[in-house]
Length: 162
Image (spheres, rainbow, N blue to C red):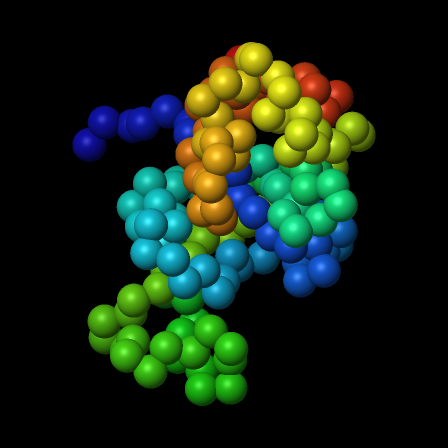
């Protein structure tokens, strides 16, 4: 099997539920509770250890890319789907045939300068980036390498992607 190159992603989270502060404190966390099939398929089938992530605060003032994370595990079944006490419990899922998958996400860096959605949309260098497109609500989405690098520059990130 041929080795694929690193891929780049944007993952959204509401800061009052789980924000960059939480990720920085925990250093690594399972990205659980995703209940969208397209996002699940991305995590299960496309993400790999070492891929980089723009960590995005949604439903915030302002909504913005606030940090960088890294995919820290291969996909595995989301345990919240099996727990009847969890708000993410899915009675149609079983351990033999799990419906929902997740990856672990690791903290890399907080952006010194968050990059707001308004700034992303106004920047012609980011034309075509999914987050800038009207009606794009998916919580896990691909990012082109050139867009990823440009957002890092805008946010004064210490991390450099070649």
